Length: 110
Length: 112
Image 1 (cartoon, each protein chain N blue to C red):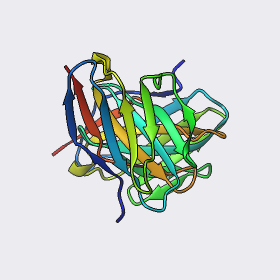
Image 2 (image 1 turned 90 degrees about the horizontal axis):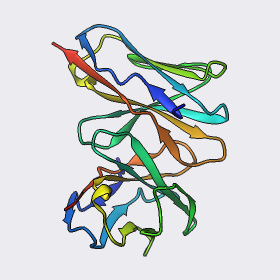
Image 3 (image 1 turned 180 degrees about the vertical axis):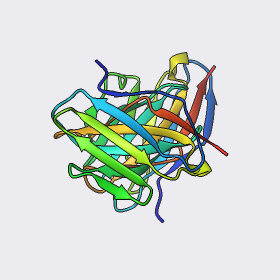
């Protein structure tokens, strides 16, 4: 089983729509969770950390379900600039490295 | 806003040659990392560095790889004898605490 698993997509959604991505992780000892976005041939950029209680940042909402080892990202009122690859990232307990999923490709259609 | 910088942006080399990739982490950060991303694949961890020593390395980081912090600002990745399969984007990252890591723009390494 992959350490971090994501649906690779692509997701093609119209501008203004709501889109949701899911991610599962295999290591129950994982402690920190993030969503990064990556534009084509660019570096990953932190979008948001994911907290146990769930958290929101503008149009973006992240949820964590530790029992199911599942993380989600919801994007409301999607913009053309949201087109990117969204990376689910996990950091294991006592371990500094980040473990990345393969990413979910999102394209917002005008 | 402070950022991680990397040079060069693109390095082309012949198989068997040595390359050094350079990074300048954010100035008050203490933890430094190298990751790589082969075209079309996921980002993979190579090595982490703290307090002037390697704190963790992956299976990818074999004897051909080394890291160094030669002065107070630079953090380098050396590949001693490059192979075709070393062709990838190499990202440097740093953080001040053991969570949010910030990535540099990457060096695209092409091994011919």
